[in-house]
Amino acid sequence: EIAHPSAHCRLNRAALSSGDLTRGRITNSSQTIYKVDICIVTNQHKPLSGFVAKLTAMRGPGDTLDVYEEWASSYEGDLLTEYGYVAPRIAVDAFLEACAERDTRIIDFGCGTGLVGVELAERGYRGVDGIDISPAMLEQAKAKSVYRELIEQDLSTVTTLDDSSYGAAIAVGCFGSGHLGPEHLGELIRPVSENGIIVLYINAIPYLEDDY
View (tube, rainbow, N blue to C red):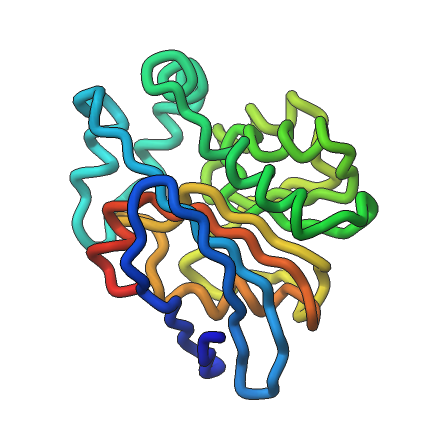
């Protein structure tokens, strides 16, 4: 169980190794309980290159919007073909275990081109909204027709999402250098209702280095 002051949340840093899946709870000052899944997967077999290397090399705030706008059309081909990207499937498998209700209203943070939305749709979830900073990535997501609504907003700021307006949230790959950090957890938790479900997939490097 993890203390969550209203503006900042810290995940309990356990000694996690590659492939570990840890379940815990986040509690805010009003005792709202959130279920959390933390999964660490590391893959050191393929050297990083191109857009992946550019994003991974960012330290501190960076202009990721320009990178994603340029990358949108080849994003899935690069990650799925070149890197065997399976994070959306792993995260949604964990989500499936925690959320049996297929009509749950879900927000997909950092939805990108919609890979998580596709995984959710294949498992029968239909009430999914997506939010992302990149218009080009959202255009790719829109073409998949798996989201109820797509929202263009910067998740590092206070969003227009209403408090407690979703029964669940999922975030895959939106934490890391140049992206979101531990200080943004509170704002991602805010739109989720009491006893809601939150599944986070955080890349191993930022999770271990950025004091989650």
